Image (tube, rainbow, N blue to C red; front, side, top):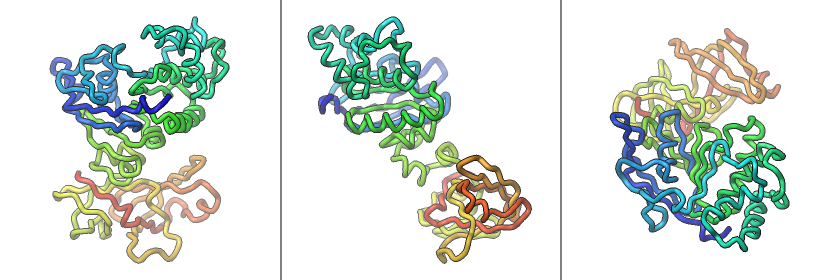
Length: 358
């Protein structure tokens, strides 16, 4: 695989309607050559429809799709030079690994003399060299996923589409394959569009994440900015474990939560209906001297849940507002957490004090 596979994608005002139902609503998105972009959203958000439009399985009601300088809006799937990894991998159980990987070459009527070298190259990319003669039933779930990826790459496509390819794997293998796919992407430099409903998966693997809701593109950003600077309440609540609290404006750089005034390091949104979006791990139990500018909240612990690698602590402010925080599950962290019914003070850095429109 070489730089020929590096091609950007441009989706221009794409929409899809099924009668009165709007599945995709005027979505525009530019994907850079070699970029890994995840389409993230709940069921019915439009992410699978958008992937179908990219792959040629769904024709848009309006708008266009360009790969490089080529308009592929109405090109059939087999003429798009796009590799696809399906959710169930769609491997042929009666074929060997090598035959499965070679299938796109056969479908495109590539010269048969070059098949063996291309298949060996693709399998080497996914670290399955020598597996050509294996049966699909002889492979683990992770190996099958890599065969599907090799098949998508064997003809050096301009773009690779992935439709939740890890959803059927168990948690441990899924997390391993996330890292493996990210490593392979860096190695290949291919342009990848990946559909998932798993927030952690999208943040782990992507250069940028496009969040969709009700057919609209809500925000596209790097994982760090998406998590730390959500554009609205939906993104804040969908990414991570944010608690959304109604606050009022208390100046140009501060909001009021109950009796407390909280400073923020970020510009406040316009309007008077504001929400404070607090990710659980951003709240820290006050254990002594902290930065003078840090925001402090006094609260009463209501419940402490042990969840293995972390502790989830629930508490209420003086006005009854519920908050929660997550602390490491080690014994040092546990020793600092008051028991249910006790008072404690939590600290929120102004950089982590994120206010979004209600």
